[in-house]
Length: 456
Image 1 (cartoon, rainbow, N blue to C red):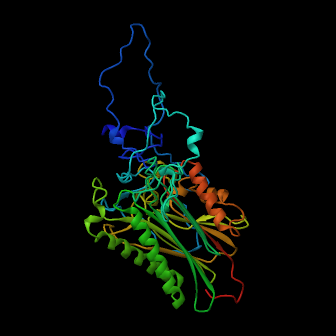
Image 2: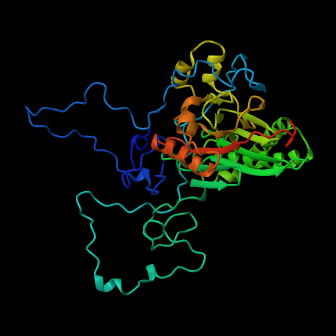
Image 3: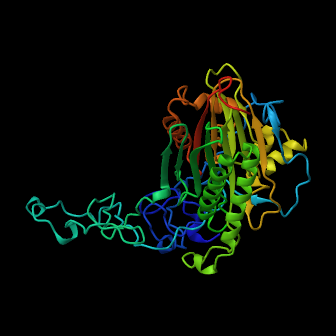
């Protein structure tokens, strides 16, 4: 392993690092500039005890922090029996070529090597600056002059201008990207996406919207996509998939296409959008010469509430959960992962707790992308007998609340009335738990249609 890959934290800002980092994602520090450690050994006086690490020391930096699935959800649990119809992976043998690694410990692409490195200060104080002269503060310098219209000001020093690479020209601080944190709320649905605490960029994406069926009744849509970190341009893949699926549903539902069929068509449209990215010229990766060229890829999960039906569709390991408002009925997970862990459980080779505790649990067996083994959209339709909330999320959230009961406990009781606040709480739960991955969640309330108010 290369020396600079062994750093656990940035020497400049102490931000935790991934094993493949070339630059710090927080401050832009060039990790290749860290000097080699001395090859000689320190002189130790004879008789001086040498401190040795205790047995069973701390875990290595960046070690996966995956909780095991609690025993309250029995092995192999998925959608409630008899709750609806759908397709799944079943017990089909796992092709060796149909596995892709994703999740909080998948190697993310190195940060784009642009922008100046952040200024550093010696712990010994050798480079400490003198206190500013209060007389000089009254005279604005050229560096602190009002920036031209349209120029961004650094969020760290509040003085320097931000260059086109996203770094402050004064202090070198990397500026927040637009996708680092995104929120959107419509009347009946809301979504929040966050970069998390360990990734350089947000590779998740979402789309929420609403339309009307031919009879005038509303249809509400939530799509969540998770870019596969081991693929090229995962952020572009998730954005393309979310946008294409959303547009497909907005076009087909008003024409009277059944919501479950419309979801199937939306997943196919999303797959085609991601596939088209692979045909783009290689010049798109000129900024990242160290990145292996492979097809962009992502997972997808979506939900549609229309005409008294709850329809979900998915490919990959992003999930949808059902939580009743009154909490009297049992919550349920509505999707089955396309993953190594789910395959082990389905074939009876491992219990669910054993499979999801394994380091291979996040190897996905289904995704959207030109190099996918096959496209197998899964859809399921449900007709709940009581109002509730659908939680549509990436594994950045369910890693910290895998079982349906856990998801119900962290979902605020007023989620149906305040979906945006509920989504913010769920994202906060993942960040408080470690935020090892990007986190995206959509909260979609479901209201029981009164008799005669709609058609199934």
